[in-house]
Length: 166
Image (cartoon, rainbow, N blue to C red):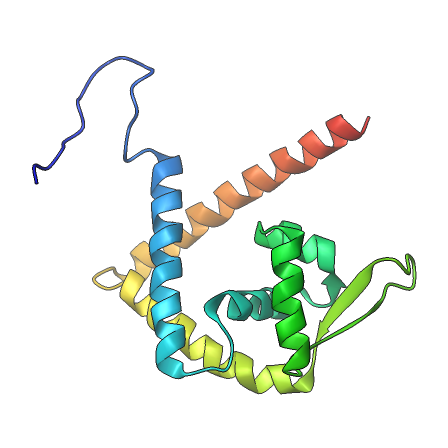
């Protein structure tokens, strides 16, 4: 199979396969696949997707189901299925939101804490693979730049929500 190389052009409309957007999407897809393989190796009783839900909850604390779905970039129905499984397994609890009884607040249980330690091992292995051959300085620089980009995008997203709400 022939290898396709990008055409170098001054045309502003040309697609750059190494543009920031493509790089972020490619790294995300590849990192997710690496994490999924590592999750299988540590033999946790949850799927990689359920593990991502648990890790996000550990990062953000108790939250509404719909906010959790939005923050994960997943359809609410998908998150509901993951939470159903995690609740049956005793890793999360759901309760009515005291402010809006129609909404559910999801929290981690004590049982989830031990599982999160095993999931963390998979995450550490995935990060080690992703950063192999890089110096600590390169990793720190990348992380700093990525955090700045995330902040820019979160600021833009909040502004767009404010604008659309008015």
